[in-house]
Image 1 (spheres, one colour):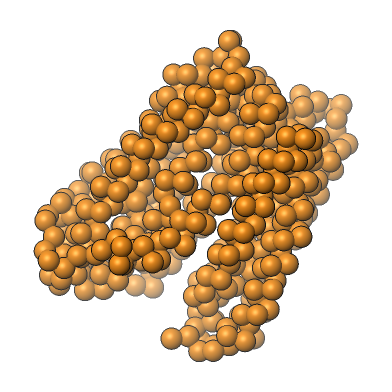
Image 2 (cartoon, helix red, strand yellow):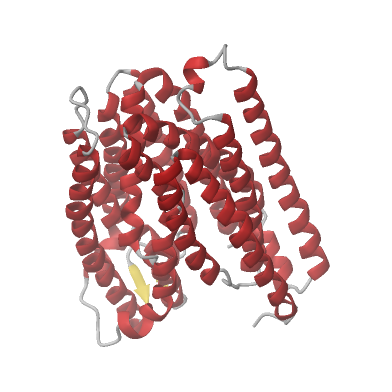
Length: 441
C-alpha cells in the first residue's frame, strides 16, 4: 500500500512539474512559428477552452471522495472487474451511471455554448488572413469529448487507482505536448491546437475503453436498490466546490479573453504569453511544496506541531525564494535586453506590467502555501476567500482593463491579491490555529 501511495505521489508531482515546464517550453516555439496575430488567436482559444470550469462544477473531487467511501468494501478481481459487497457495488454503479449522464449532458452543453461564444468573440476582431473557424470548431469538439471522459479518471482515483491515473496523465501530457510542438514547428499554425486536443481525447478514450475495459464494463450493470443520491449525498459537498470553480476563471483565463475583446488578437497574444510565463514560474516553484503535502499531513495526523511548522516553513520559503529569484532574473533580462531580444520581448507585455503580474503571482504563492498547510489538517477553510475575491478579480479586470488596458488588468490583479486575498487568508490562518491543535478525528 505504501509503495502504491509513493508511486501515486511521484507520478502526480512529475505530472505537475512537467505541465509547468511544458508551458514554458511552448513559449519560444510559439514566438518562432506564429505571427503576433496568430499568437493572439492561440491564447484566446486557450482562454475560451478554460470556460469548461463552468461545466465541471467541481464534480471531479466529489466523485473521487464518494467512490473511495464505497471502494473500502470492494476490489478488482482476477478478470479486472469490480467485486465485493453488493450494497457498495450497487452504490458505486449508481455513481458511475450518474457520471455518464451528467457529464454527457454537460459536455454537449459545453460544446454548443462555448463554440457559439467562441465564434462570437473571435469574430469581433477577425483577421481575414487567419483561418480560425475550422480549427476552433475541431478544438472545442475534442475538448468536449475530454470533458465527458475526464470524470472517469476521478472515479478510478476513488477506486484506489491513483498511481495508474497519475501515470496516464503524465504520458498523455507528454504525447499531447510533443504533438503540439511538432505541429507548430511544421507550420500547422492554429491547426496544432485541435491536434493537441485530439491527442488528449483519443488517448483518454483508449485508456478507459481498452486498458481499463474490465473495470468500466462492470460499471454498465444495472445498480440495485442501494443508490447514491445527487440531491442528498453529492450536492451538499459539491455546491461549495462548484462556486469555487466558477470564480476560479476570474483571473488569468479571463484576462486574455478581455484583452482580445477590448484590444484585438495582438494584445491578447501578448497578455496570454506573459501570463503563461508567470503561471509557469509560479507552478514550477510551488511543486516543491506540493511534494511535501503527504509528509505535512502525516505530521499533522501525529500531532507533531513543531515538526509540521518547521517543515512547512522551510519548504514554503524555498518555493517562494525560488519563485522570487526566477521572476527577478526574467524581469532583469527583459529590462536590459531590449536590443538583443527585440522580437521576443515584443511578444510580451511591458516591463511595468510584468512586474505587477509577477508581484501578484508571488503574493498568490504565499496564499497557496498557506492552503497546503490548512489542507494538511484536512481543512478547507478558504472557500469564502476564493469566492469573494474572485468577484473582485473579475470586476477589477473588467473595469480597469476597459479604461487602462493591460496595465489596468495587472494593477487590479496585484491590488486584489495584496489588499484582499492575502490579508483575508492570514486572518483565516490566525483564527484557525487554535482549532488546528485539536487532535484529528
